[in-house]
Length: 456
Length: 105
Image (cartoon, rainbow over all chains, first blue to last red; front, side, top):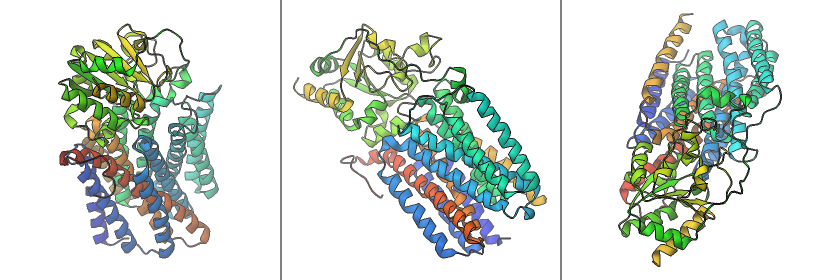
């Protein structure tokens, strides 16, 4: 049993985690909240080294250094656009760590109660699912494998079979306390994670990251039960519960349910469609024409999307907006809740370019202003302005809340090509009579617009 | 067995706290929140350290050390990347001269 003072420190750390999550709910306190969480984690780790009878200290400190250096460097250096996959990776390794810890506990299964053994089996299975599932989401987002749903005949039956097998194996592991069975359980968990994420379409992957995040939380919580460590139990449960709420909130922002995301592709209703390039006529224009349209508008609403982020054009768009404001044009940014690749991702990217917070319009406000806007400038976005979400019940994105760019007087799309968006479906708005297209890389097009505006 | 029930009580209460604390978060902060929650479960490092610290044979120690590395990656990387995201939310009040304000505080 660990000393009382250490348990009190664990309670303090748990409170830090609660305050961290609480702080993260407001932009003003968010950063402080995160720091409080980090302090809590540091306290917990230091206390663990002192309170428990820790052998192999040198090796453990070395392992901590081996993990900490690439973790900190990777987190510092990664481009903000690649952040979703980094979070996925961090989540996956956390799940993997939980599974390994539980696996090692099974080796003295004769000392564990039935409840603890059950919790071990749960941690091994869920941790393994989270690990392999996160690796697949990482590969999808990093575009090391296709973002399209991958299905094969009988897929649902294979997945169902694996689920039944894992539950059976879990029960068998608990009944026998066998290490061999526990290892097989971990392997089946890895397979289940892969099968879980493969059929998920590109646009839905971030929601799956959030779901796997909740999974890892639950795995850590169960690990806390096994080790009789209340801090792990509280921290893991907090993440599991908040992750579940967050997953639902994200799914709602996209007008989808969590089950339709996971099992959509099985039923043929996933978010990724054909992805063919259409050859229907569109109206395109040069930067000079578009610059004139913008300069003589009264109100322009910018709709930024992932294309803006990929081109690293956040700073250029701000320059363009500053120029327009100097000419007396009223400008705002319409931010779709899932613009970019995760909820709130676009806010982070624009904040990076020092865009004032007041210019960022949430969806409802933006839709009100779009009705009276002269120009909607859509930069590297597609699915979030696709009217099919409102009008065609057959479309995979039907029901997703969108920005009503089609209500503006004119619509300008800055696009690289006629390729469909992340969800892989065609956008009727591109062929609308009010729409003008300016082809090219978002950054190059915006730079051309800035030059054209300056010479007006 | 009472130990088990005590832990179960803690678990149930933590579920409600977890639900309550994040129920009113604006969608703007969903990404940092997910990332912050992700960092918090990196505290499984505590479990990995305990297991590594009681390892009595080489094979067990190796596996436990792998768990320590993975958990540290999760914990440290998670908090740092969340801080980097949030740095951008707070920074603009200070009228930053340019966006190239990388590195520490």
